[in-house]
Amino acid sequence: MKIGYKPFQLELKYPFTIARFSRNFTPVMLLDISLDGFTGLGEASMVPYMGENIQSATDFLSNVDLSWMKFPFDFDELTAYLDGIAPGNPNIKAAVDIALHDLSGKMLNIPCYRMFGSDPQKMPLTSITIGIDTPEIVIRKVKEAENCHIIKVKLGRDNDQDLIKNIRSVTNKPLFVDANQGWTDRNQGLDMAHWLAEQGTLLIEQPMPKEDMDSNAWITEHSPIPIFADEAVQRLPDIEHLKGAYHGINIKLMKSAGMAEGFKMIQLARKQGMKVLIGCMSETSCATLAAAALAPLCDWADLDGPFLTANNPFKDPEFNDGKWVLNDDSGLGLSGYKL
Ligand code: MG
Image (cartoon, rainbow, N blue to C red; front, side, top):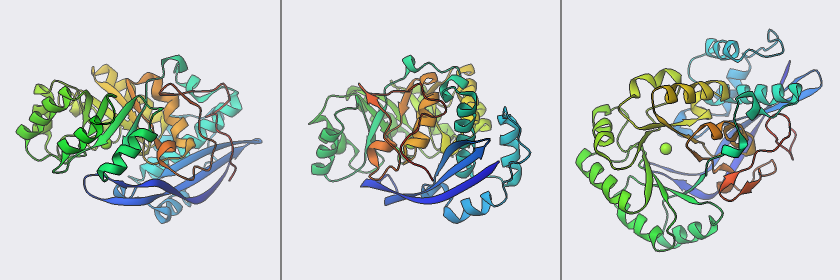
């Protein structure tokens, strides 16, 4: 099995600002894995706060030798093998996992979503993030997002209510709110949750720092709308102790180290009676379609990578009436780019 890879600078349409920092592009590693004349594509989107970069990805890949893998691939074995090379590194592990799922689908001649029993007819609505910006640009972004039926807003600053009022002056669409751990007082957090519910907010992500489990759990207990863990959950073992502390979890393939573990996380969350949102980093069509393949198993999607980036090297996936459309092509259904 042959692995090829290429760094790619994925540019953002607007500088991306969340509670603690701002940036203009995301370093991405694009990957292809070939076997028997078939090629699968994968992607690692390496947002700086997760700690990976082109160098760490290159170092990790120099230790990956997939010659032991036989088709059909055993993804549990793959996960154990990648975790055995080094701990952490979920972004580049996800790239390998995604490429092997795409390859697998192509070799089996089925779309990836079918490997998970995922029904494209059950695709949930996807939100689009409106980053923190000047009031004029926020209004422009909301207008540009007319194809999406849910607006996601990043809060966690002093002027949270002004930002929401600003958005409400241009649209009545339902909102997802992501506080990105930016709230520090549980009483104020709960007041915000009540106020946001009145403003048409469907859910709140990570109201308080992940380490403050008690306060997040307290807000969850009293909140009129669902509270989701994002920063507090990365991989499968994180979910078990979150039962009761949050109503749901935000799964991202760049945190879960790929589709195989992402799927297990959805199953475990369901078993624990938790809701599931599937989210993304700034990603090309490759990781977006990988997440979209699992999205019908989730309650909501926040897969806006292709909307927020300026130089997606692949063709944008089809988007209709607020939802991604999964096609019948084998593998991820990607087109338009070769490494
Ligand atoms: Mg989040």
